[in-house]
Image (spheres, rainbow, N blue to C red):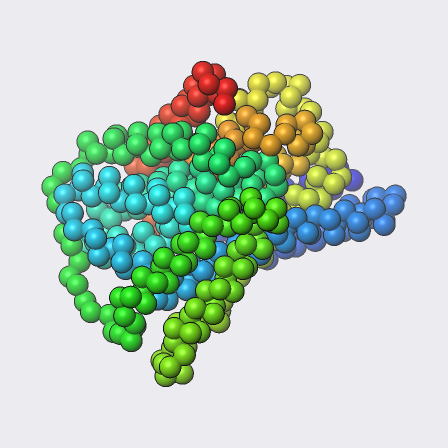
Length: 427
């Protein structure tokens, strides 16, 4: 059974990694891998009823992550439909390359901590297309955006899918992860920014401003209301979880419902055809459902490996072979440059229990940092990088030459800061 399960997962994962080469969407592969893993587990299991129970139990955990992402993605689409993010771009007037890259880096870092690294990357690329006319200049800025988005997403429970998974799984708490990982994540950004600043000279050529009449019916007040309310909903989800003790997706769905009502009231007197693209229903149509289904497939495949005991045995082997938790976690982070960090974190959650390592233990905090930022080292290592690669047609080897060494410097600097914090303060 072990050989068959690992073969199914290995083949499925290889197909996901080489999606562009084989030209088969990774979501289809993930769904098939997830189902076949459970089929194999069921076939070899002596007690079929237990397998069904474990499947439904894992489905509940996975669904809580998926509904959370569904709500968050819809809110972001709603803000974008109301041109809420344009409010941010209006404040950036700097043209000096060195100054601008620091501004872009810090905006991306803090925006990613509130939204998520993938969404922030999409927003910032759209912003850079308005700010920088030269595609060659823009590529370097986009590379920094990938690093900053992943660094910013690592230190809050809603900034990265993997951190969200650890938060929902009970491995980390909101306040603790923000306190412990802020400085390491900041170092992960500042070191690459400082290094790349020496390469930049002169000013960027701004894009000519063209009036966009798509949302001419919107007022600035309406844009600000949706932006503020959308961000407020996302920020208050951890507060909702803390005071109600309900899963985070419940807070996200509550906020989604409230925003739905606000937009209905805001546009109740507008012409039906003109306001269609501003409705939450339209935002639901625009979200990337294939991403949701990809997470479903890959997380269910990991769940099958966990339920079969493979992950527990892997953890035992790592402990016996390597032993040092810091090295194990840093290796996982470096692996996320090649392998998607979602299954890596899911696998680690299955390998180590909360009984063995309780909430806010060193391993979970360090894992949140390493898995969140290690993916920046290669452009295929994170959702933010893959999105940037597709949108800006970034060559893999260009990224390796220009950006990878910066990302590696930042990754190692942040890891060193975290280990230093842990050794000095033990807090």
